[in-house]
Image (tube, rainbow, N blue to C red):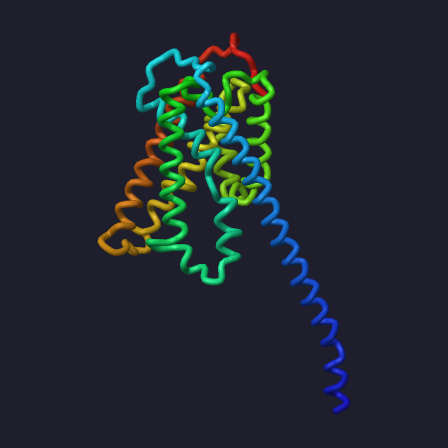
Length: 260
């Protein structure tokens, strides 16, 4: 009995330690939700201001015909600005039945369809309407108040949300950006390169390979069809931006303003 009492004495300390660890995990989880929410708010504000400029015909400055390469070009910015990894993990962790997050129909499926439709609309509008493709999100009037606000909001949103995913892609980004990001010190080029060279793998190419690796094709092979479309989309983004990055090595940006 004495030995049992002696052995049982450290137990309260262990319980307190476990309770303290649970408390730290709860605080860390809450902090992740708050940071993700703040980042989402900044992203929504940036997109809203961008839409305001997009619908303002007085700012029209289109000077060339937009082809498939131009549509893929602005697509890189859309993928960068609207990629929603900051919502997926907190939402899935908060669900009582996270299994319902996947499959078809499911929350993820509906969200991806909505995001894809939103991206297509913005890509087409940005390509054929006002900002010479590249200036749909990163405005052609960088000295204006709204022009600065949209870039600050986009940068703040990315600062809050992208560390969640870029920790995984860190080495890939470092190796890629050193070769692909060339001399022009324009922030929109940096964002476009990351959107296409990094996020094309993270959001299109790798998810497109999952059904074939797991041999889970869904009913009537719907997952296989979606995976093929995602893979083709990601490959087109990747190849188009590799081509554009190579062109930047020969471009002369000495007469262009450096945007913040």
